Image 1: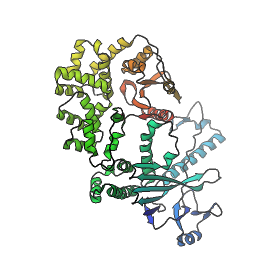
Image 2: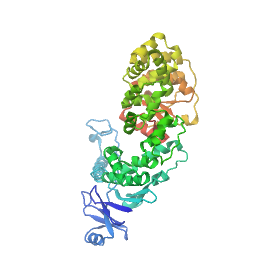
Image 3: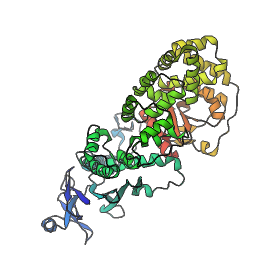
Image 4: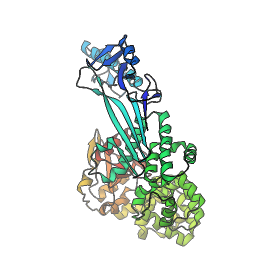
Length: 547
């Protein structure tokens, strides 16, 4: 069964047709276009509508599709003067009209006209739902015999080789195969992933979200999702009504990302979130399952030694990765299930457990449990510094320098938690212990992270002394990462601007674990824009829960 949907001109709504149509591109009259026009394929030109349009539409061979101009942001002219009377631009540049000559005034006024048109076309090119009007066609094809769904979209691309922008059609396909547990995307097939196996899951998830939110109108997303549930019903024999009702109560899961999870594990889609997560992969648990097994969740809990209680099930439905948090808590030596629930029912506590280096966290908790018991240890763990990263750093330093920590400082940590005072004490201790200068050696992939983007320089510390200097300047405990650098477990990248330390970054393989400014604060908006360019250039992604 195949359904065809075309956008109504000038609207966010899509209308269903009985068959695929030829497209007649039209440009609506507006403040920059004196008359409405249609695109004539025969002459490859835009023509006034007049009576031609009515005749073409009346034949029912064509369906009208709105063509909007592509917004092109003009470059602001740059003038340098000694100002007397000034007008400051958006980017901080200064225009001094008293010093403009006729040519410069003309250039600036021309820029203002182009900018005004750019703002108009930028707004005019979007529908009321914020979707580009370029996306004008959606085709949904369901094969109940083979249990597949194929979603095809068409949007406009423009031929920039012509003097005037002319319409061309670009097609993209998203294909879900429930029977074989696979999906495909034409956008993905164009990308070279041969050298990027570790990015595959990340790229897959991003491509699905991009397809849905950039190409599918809001009203159609739920419609397509509920159509897909029929295929799941045919595969699992779960009542279709119960499937629809299950998701009707949880609208956030009515999305294409959930369609992908249903394709992977139809009986327990949220389990795919767990199995494909980095925190599960590093456990190297060889868990095999049958996609046709309705008890896959129960068997996973047995394999992970998780108590399959009603509370755990509810927490899993609300937050699938709570199963991995459970395993991390168990690794820390806790056995009281009520303490597990205390962590799992609090997202902030769960993120803290998941993001803290597992071995160091377990070292502290097992040491503390042996002296003070589980409840006191949990209380100590969750109190102390209000800074998420400061507490993590303290735990790492406690484990790395335990033999050198004075008894009084140990007691203070056990009873007061990782307060700012205790963090500073550990930082000073680490600085003293790591102050013996050691030169670092780096692999080629580490050295490739060095870069310069605009005024920001991305660099690697040359030795221990430099690492300590960075920590002192940034007011953090990066000096305690010396052993990690030497063991090639982490790569520390620092960022300078005009000889000032701006950012400190921890990278493991291709993943960002920490990315902070001075005093462990979040990067500014300007810094984030630079970081995003650096991520894209070096194919870096955030680790689970790092943001």
